Image (cartoon, rainbow, N blue to C red; front, side):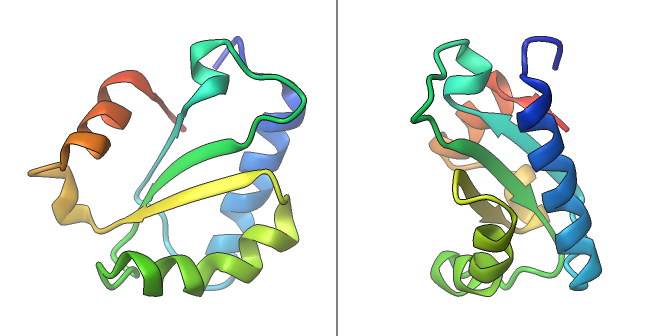
Length: 104
C-alpha cells in the first residue's frame, strides 16, 4: 500500500471502523481499480471489495445495507460486497480483484 495516498488510506480505515461499529464484521477488504493501477486522478472512486459473514449474498440488498455508511464516510467509496463463500469459487470479476488488488 506504499503507493496509496494517505488520504485514501484514512478513508479506508474510517470506513472499516464505521462498518464494524454498525456490526458489519469485515473478514477481508481488497482495494482495486485505479488506485492500485497507479492511474487515479482527482475524479477516481475508491474501489473496495468487502467480504463479510454479515452480508446476505444478494448484491443489491447488501449494497443498500451499507449505502448510508458508505456515503457518510466518503462519497468516492465504491464498495462491492461479497460473502465468504465467494473466496472459494470467485466469479471472474472477483477473481480479478483478488489477483490484482491490495488486501487491506
